[in-house]
Image 1 (cartoon, rainbow over the protein chains, first blue to last red):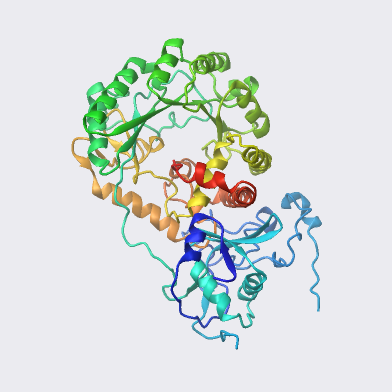
Image 2: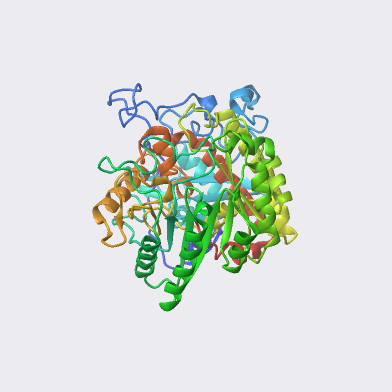
Amino acid sequence: MKHLKGVNRKGKKIEEEKGDLPVVEAQGSIPFMHTCTSVFNPGYEIDWTGSTKQLCTPIETDLFGTTDMYCWWPGQAPDTYNNPDWNADCTRAMKDWMKLKVVKPEW
Amino acid sequence: MENIARPSAAEAILLPHRSFTAEGEAYLYAAETGGLFRMDKGVRDALSALASSGAGAVPGEVLSDLRRAGLLGTREGGRPAGRTAHPPLRLRTLVLMLTYSCNLACRYCYEDREEGCVPPADGKPAPREMSRESIRENVRFLLDQSGENRKVSIVLFGGEPLLRFPLLRAAVGDARAMASARGKEVSFSLTTNGTLVTREIAGFLRESGVSVCVSIDGPREVHDVNRPYASGRGSYDDVERGIEYLMENRSGVPLAARVTLGRGAVDVRKTFDHLRGLGFDEVGFAPASAAEGSDAALPGEELDLVLDGFRDLAAGYAADVRERRMPAFGNMTQILAMIHRGDPMPYPCGAGIGMLAAEPSGAFYPCHRLCGVGDPMGDPTRGIAPDARARFLDGAARRCESVCDACWAKNFCAGGCYHDAYVRQGDLFAPSTHYCRWIRELFLLGLQTYVRIQNETPTFLEAVLGERGIA
């Protein structure tokens, strides 16, 4: 492995493992999992178990949970690799959401 | 020429992971393998590209690294390693519910719930006290089932186990004799409210090498509100005296405090400092299991305050390690040990796998908190009830494979405590989604602390965490 360096015991073990793995023909995509229903299912009023307990919360109550790619309708957020500080002044999203930084892409 | 993967219809998907920066470097935790890696810019760019819908080409070499680390799967059976069967019972820990009686009436206690411990079986109330014969049967079962394990562990629990000190003393003596007759070693730990500890008891605990965990919730004003006697009188003075006796009888075994955080009392730093001041070697915190909106349940903003307190303690933890002091923040030691080993964990705890609880009627349950909840998992004379155990582990696996599958913190949480889910949602296998954000933030704090210690004092990780068991 040239691009990843193992840090914990498991990471080091993976790094040391020999043997070629097949090169994958890959295209990124957003997997959607089981946390929300799809448009063809009953609707957003109930979750996949038929109850309301796991329905989406408003973005400000779970800023990180609703901006990652596993959310069916992810909130708009800049990528955190190139903009690590986008939420630096926003310790509690419920209160401080107006302090989230606006990120403009560089062209 | 650089190997470029072309976009194709049989696309790969990104499996749950978390990237973060710590100590000025970028890191990546892969939930499928439990591997933690430092990543270079090539991987950072690839993750951005893979996560956006219009993914461009990613160098094949980077993809190969990502696949190896457990970050790439395919839609069709894309998991690198699937689980097909239940883990075998590898009994290492048996919790003995010596008695269900308790001299306190803590405001968050789960024992007094109607559907809590000891529901009447066939209309007759189940016994509340364990007999000495029952203890011996249970110990025999533990030794029989421990297989190649030379070391087994017995947790003396209740109720308040020191209400039955003569029985407890007999249990320790019997278990030790039975274990040594079979060439095994048994360790004991006691969870107590501390109010009944006398000099004699403290002396016995030291001589017998019993490790003691005292349930204490902080300074007097907090503790007395949370943990009063049934009369309403606070128990702090009695616990403090008990702790004094334990301190007078210190041995090499660390003395631990277990703090339950209830509504309105979440000053983690103050509590931690207070308990360190009393002499505890280790302090662990847990939010009370309580129905939503109940008197004890922590509202969201208080959970945030707890997290702030944990961040503060985590900074102190790293500083302790740097200066070669054994850190006392027990939750962090647990998290770091888990990260260090990096074994993917599809169950939230060892309940029904490496641990069982035996209650006074003789029945086994998956853990001490689940006594009387659901079907018993067998008993020491007839052995494990395979159907009940399979149902329990099926429920646990189903939960983890559905809702939690996409979460990068699943190895840390695996859906959360069964008992907490039962109390809050009436279903052992309902995922504790009310804690999701909190758990992810806490795990991230663990990852960042791990990296910091790895950079500053790497020897600590293998020496201290490598051998540490996970409760």
